[in-house]
Amino acid sequence: MDEANNNMYGEIEEIIDDIEQRFNQINKSSILDYPPYDHHFFKYDRNSKNMGLESAFRQRIEKEWLLLENKLPSSILVKSYEKRIDLMRTVIVGPPDTPYAHGLFFFDLLFPRNYPNCPPRIHYHSYNLDLNEFLDPKGKVTLSLLEGGNFLTNWYCGVQGKWNPEKSNILQVLTAIQTSILSTTRVNPSGREGYKKAFTLTCKGMIYMLRRPLMNFQDFVEGYFRTRAHYILLNYKKQMDGSDLMVNLFHELYRAFEQNGTYCKHHRLVDLPAKEKIKQPRVC
Image (cartoon, rainbow, N blue to C red; front, side):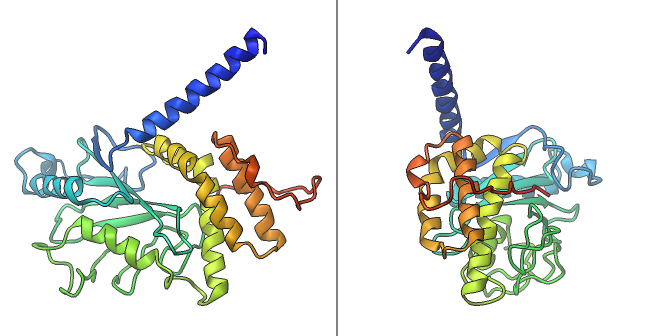
């Protein structure tokens, strides 16, 4: 191998190591200075009085931050913002043994001016995918435990009743989304077809996220799929039914992972015609 090739491969190796190193250094709960401009509630008219160091609003938000830092499960990652304490962005990993396993699901949160008297507002980043009836393509989040869409006006804390300003918190909301919405029972229509739909759309979402990751989470998305690609493709093969749709989606997923730096050639499906043209997914 000549010197030019040596330099080229050395550079690629350094890039790969850098991505994995940044991913390994990510904390599950962190506070940045400013929110990203692609945050759904970025232009929301904040109340500057609430941002004061001595305000009751700030004290409650800081209490939420501390709870997340100490109690947040490893399958949920949260970014908060010092200059906009009323905003938060989070990603939830799909639970195992569900059609959402290994998927990433992003939500933007807004703490209203009268929080915690009123619960937080939530927007789901759907990538225009109709995942299930509880996660709307337009970003609306609903549950049998939720009424009023993005406003958690009737959000129940386990069996304790409605949102309680003294007892309810954002950690309970996030874990409720993970355990109630992203579960095997939350597929529509029901049965095998519903499971397959949720599974394939979750995989499409992976492709779209790699092509257009949300701000503040670029390193996480790249590193996460770098480390999970092997398991995702193995799981996909178990779910395959031989249809052209699933075969083509597998190869789109495979190529997306390889472009992200994962070696996937041992996962290739040898029975796919070499000249078959695979349509590229469109990010909406």
